[in-house]
Structure formats: C-alpha cells, structure tokens
Length: 511
Image (cartoon, rainbow, N blue to C red; front, side):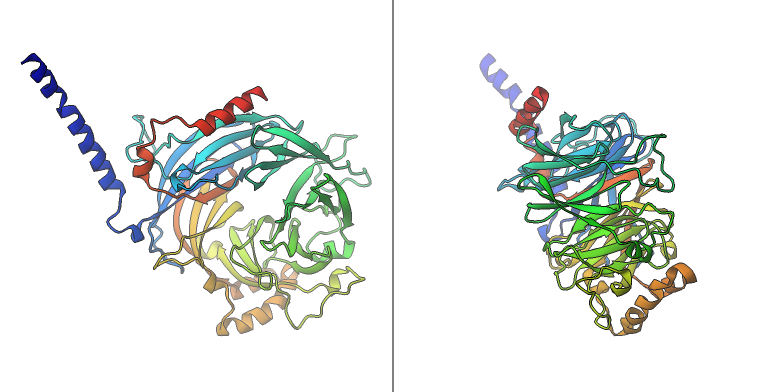
C-alpha cells in the first residue's frame, strides 16, 4: 500500500507541468500561422556606453501610407547593460549561422567603442520565449522579455585607438577599422587576427576647420570602409585626406588611390574651409557602383572609379548615414540618406536622361549629372525634427498581405527615439503626378543652398510611422534584423547547453 500511495502522490506533478506548457503554447501560437506577427530585434549604441536590445512586434497587416495612428508596434526590452567604458560608435551584425532549423540560428553582434575594444555577442534569431519576464521591478512600464539564448562571447583588442567601423562580409570574417589607421581582418572561428591593413598617415599640409587634434599632431584614422560583394576589393576613406583608397583583399595590399577633385567637392557642399574627407562609403548589391558621402552631399562612382552622379539633399542639410535599398537593380538603384533635420531622403541613382554623360578624361563636377530626389520619410511635416544618426532597412517576409516589396525602416535619433516605419517600394516609383516634380527636382536641388527650403514642398512624403520607443539614451548607432522561429519552440530548448557558444567563448578566453 505504501508503494501505491507513493506512486499516486507523484502523479499530479507531471500533469500540472503539462498543463502549464500547453497554456504557454496556446498563448504563443496564433490561430492562423499566415497572420503571425513579425518580430524584429533592434540594437542601439549610445554615448552613454549603453548597449540596448529591443524587440518590436508588428502585426502582419500594416499600413504602407502615412497615418496618424502610430500604435501598431509592441516594444519590449531584451537586454540593457554598459558594454563599454566609453561611447559606442559602431555596430555590426553577421549573417545567420548555417542551420536547417530557423530556431537554432544565431547572429554575431559586434560593437566598437572609443575605449579601443570590440565586444562580441551571440544573438538568437528566435523571439524570446513565453514567460521569460524576470521578477524585477519595472518603473517605466515597459515589457521586459529577456532571451536566455543570447550570450556574451568576449572582447577583442586588435586596435590601439577608437574603433570607427565594423563589418561582417561573411559569417567567417570580421573587418574592423580604427583611428590608428589600420583595418584588421579577424577570423570568427577562433577570433584570430589574420592580417592588418595599414593606411598611411596623411601629410600635415593644412589642418581642416574644426580639427580637434593636439598641436603637432595630424588628424588620422579610417572613417569608413566598404567591401565589394565579391570580397576581393575594398574601398576606404579616412580623416585628414581628400582621397579614397582601393585595397586588394586577396593580397592585403593597396590597389590604388583616387584623389577628390576640388571642383567636385565644391558641388557636393564641401566649401573652402571644409575638410573634404569622405565620411561614409558603400557598395550596391550588384557591385556595379558605390557611393562616397561627405558632410552635405555624396558622389556615385562606377566600377571604373569615375564619378557618375552626385547627390545633394534638398533643402541642404548634414548627412549622417547612407544605405542602398534592398531589391533594387543596377539599372535603377535607390539610395536612402538620413539627415540632420529628421528625414530619410530617397534618391534614384540613375542620372536623368536629359543630362549628358561625364567625359572619360575629365572629373569636373560641372559634367556630372545630379540624381533626382524622389521622396522623403519623416521630417517636420510628421513631427520628426531630431537628427537621425543611423537607420536599418529590412524586408518583410512574403505573405498574402505583405509582399517582398514591403520594407520596414528602423531609425535611431540623437534624442533617444527609435522609430519603426513601413514603406512600400511602389511609393518610390515616379508616377504621372510626379513627372513635374521629378523634372523640376533636379533643378531646384542644385539651388537648394541658395534658395533655402523651397524644394522641400515638392518632395513626395512616403512611409507610415508604426511606433516609437524612447530609449532614454543619446543614440549613436543602430542595427536590426528580422527574427525567425516561434517562441514555444525556443521554450523547450532552454535547458540544453549551447555547444557552439561554449566553443567560441573558450577560444576567445585563450586570445
């Protein structure tokens, strides 16, 4: 009888556990999988040394035009900690790990700071599990959904100056640039620096306006770099020099130097007292063209390293970030630029047909056509006036209500606001009503610096603000990706050890 009584006492416990798991699954799994919401992971870096992770859950049916109702997104905190000893300057996300199961995929997050260190993390591509809220007080009222699958890998000390740019050209390689004029190539398998590309220190021919270097020192450092999709060529721009450098990544040596023409710099807003240095650089998806962005304008170059077109936002303003839109073709690329006045301005990189092509033997700015400003997102017309320091463009998965042409744009502003926008690529196509605007847009854009904000009224407003989240920190950089998998599947794998993370951590400790 004692044995029967003991067995009977042990039976209710498994039944209660099964009921709890069933309740969690019912809460996480929607009735119709086609109407499951989209969850994106947003990571922000700030001047306050804070690395902030946020999840934004967006319903499947989202508007693609302007609307006053902006309560479409549910935000939740996933992690918040002081990752560095000083301001965070840049972030980079690797491609997902190779896995047949979306729930087991991981993304490597790298953050660079002025403390000369690079912090590394493993982030899960699946949403946080149901019931992952910690038992802590929350005065702000924001939901906290910590994901136990996220892990810290360690730090790298490959540079002796502030980190200025990070990029994962593939899952196996990490490229990092710093103000010590070096670009390090690191293997992610064991986090070993394979080789270092050393750029020459610029000559002290003339100190630019606003230079903060100490007396007797020369401003130096890599501002930004961009790797060609073939991963055999790289373009970099640096401080204190009016040129861009081409590098052969196969040999790790310099492939060439292209100086910026003075007349060209004047046409993109670089005056007599400006530094004339490139701030941002990037390739399109096809590798047929790349841009070099300056303080107030940008220039597009072809594979022959000759300028093809120039870009000037209207009205004239300072540029902070530039990115190509996904899904564009080499014949009709579209470039998005974030500005000082809270806008993201879209340009068609295809030069107007009425403008003659630039001469092959001349690089003067007078022969370079100007790209057409086709639309803008945000700005004072929708109540956004703070500078947008960084943004990310994401594609939505193809469903009956959202096709691959629909985009999500996540922006981070200096005032600490993270905004999620919905945008349809069809709104960026010039229609019959935009014919006069596109034709006239190239003319007033060139006179934007003289006539003020008159052309801004002719720019089409696109996009819909879905939600806003205030981080409370001064954002300097932002990264985001679309999360895959389902929460209930991750909930069943919480107790299993992460073998891949353990191997990476041990190799980093030996480093």
